[in-house]
Length: 290
Image 1 (cartoon, rainbow, N blue to C red):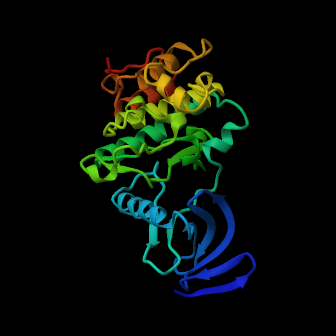
Image 2 (image 1 turned 90 degrees about the vertical axis):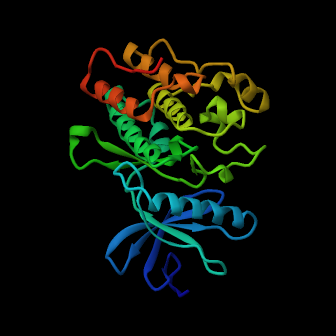
């Protein structure tokens, strides 16, 4: 690999990518804005951290590479390139989304219902494509949703794109889940995930429901339960709190998406239809789930 340092803030990676400013950082990777000198476009480089946890990071990145390479949808962040061989800096090259995460947007306060309906439709359409491919994301949360400026204002200011498939799994791949290890983010986990059951597509619908509830109201659905093991146990039999201020159509959709029994939740396709009704301002959202 060629890593030619051009300045304290930029470097040429593998003779192709000019690293620029850092746009995100987590426990396993740092994300940079970069320039692809071969194709003349701006990309995002997800550089994996070395040291402790590097093997797990690389495994997650290989999962993300394999799953994203099989998917193509406007509501999913696109994968362009990857370098995951050992003894070299490991990275993924992805679509650069020039906007905030949903988590960052939510710090400014609740999102207006009509705008949120557009975002819900985007994310449900992305999940429908993921589920149709036999994949479960398992970590739908505000920080994994990127907001890109829409090309037209007809759909609101932002378009939503789902990112980070590092702990996603194929529905028929039992090797992705090891007994005793719960994968995901507790705040947005479905009850069956806390029971260490095999994840089905309904876990993503539940998580999306909690994300939309928090974006709409400014309050997490399980905030009153606190955190820790005791709170997780109480969540197995407790529905998320939906304030009385949430109107009937939104309430009906969110209640269905966050049913404790996964069999009673709508599919992602049904959520798409319901979100379209909310965008249009229809008086009654139609859901076929029980």
